[in-house]
Length: 561
Image 1 (cartoon, one colour):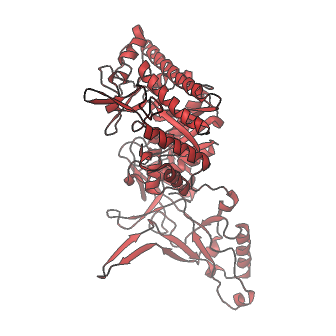
Image 2 (cartoon, helix red, strand yellow):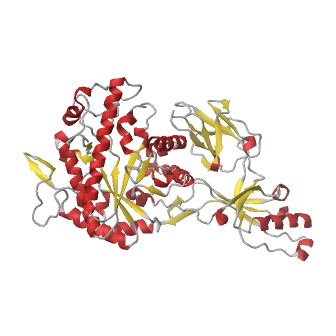
Image 3 (spheres, one colour):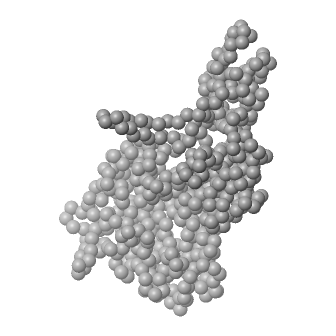
């Protein structure tokens, strides 16, 4: 819906300017696009005959013109547009009998303000409405000469925050008939009768999506259609509600019901719970049978600017999806991407961007000089006052290892090491002689040296950090991405534990989430990831033998987020 605040041309140029290519998943939203009719003092979505100048029964003329322009421009600019339609509708304009409802009659409402509601897969009028909307957008794409890529977005039976499942609107109750039984809470095991009802609900949901695809293909005519299903894993595969997948991940969706299975998991991404994503993807594959080659992945969602830390989790999730060889990966949503300026740099030239996990010759590095640096913008006003803005949250280090080269043999070692790294192309480990321990600067590490975070009962991953300054004030935190694994010690509430693994970029992954309120601490020695600052070494044997010390600079390489 936020897309309508931009013209199609500006929207697409924003996507291109941020460096994204390939496919755009365009959510048709839950408001703005439909036509309305009055009933009393209310306005409700309309399926009456189009008015003069309108082309379709389900969508209004401004939305028609806007989307036609968007699809035409996307095609011309080389973008592939996926049209996404969900079972969600702006509550204020939804007919009451179309809404999913809990057993006591409460409508299924999302947490947005104002709320949206979920359409009942059992209600014929609600499903006819969705089919009409789908036909209209398929026709716009068809007539623009564009490929029709149609996504059914997150179709499900709504589960309320208190775990009531909304299977009890009038149409659903009529469809279930004598099979309708009470399910007051979706968590935990269920009776045979309850499972039978959930299976029936899943069959109803699968049939409704199949009918939707039939409508799109019929409207498309000879134009090929790619069909996609977007499933939200944290709700569908909730460990506390193992039977919910009967209703919300039905076997009727198994391959080849759709061409592509799209998986989304932003609750897990927000929590940094990468193992949950790994398990969820495996379960979805096991249940529905879509191979990785027929999957897409949606990562993360940063609702508020204060939650910018989530972008780092999204980078990890993208990397994991790439490791699974997922063909298309989507970062959503554009308003948040544009707001925070998130750009993902894909390392396509692996040799150039590689890290050699080798140590710089220790004997040469022991006499290095070090220069930590920050980037601060200072603006002086006419009155002489200053405002200062720190661009970096952490210092970037620079080392001069020239003073450590004291013999021709060490010079030969250095040149060989430089050639093996291809100059500045490959980064490597460097042991800072002045600061390489979690305890003080070079002291012996203990497992309680550095606080990594507080357990919340869900998060399993914690990044290694070292704090500088008063812990009670605002210490400057430094990410440690290259710890000495042999020295690493992890503790929970002061007790050393071994139930963890060390992942890339200094991330500790626990086998199970640490409990709510627990202190996660660590002790370690560490190296600095660095590279040579130049592709050339300036050496002269005569001046070297005369005692002139060459300048050989190493610069820190930023890893992690």
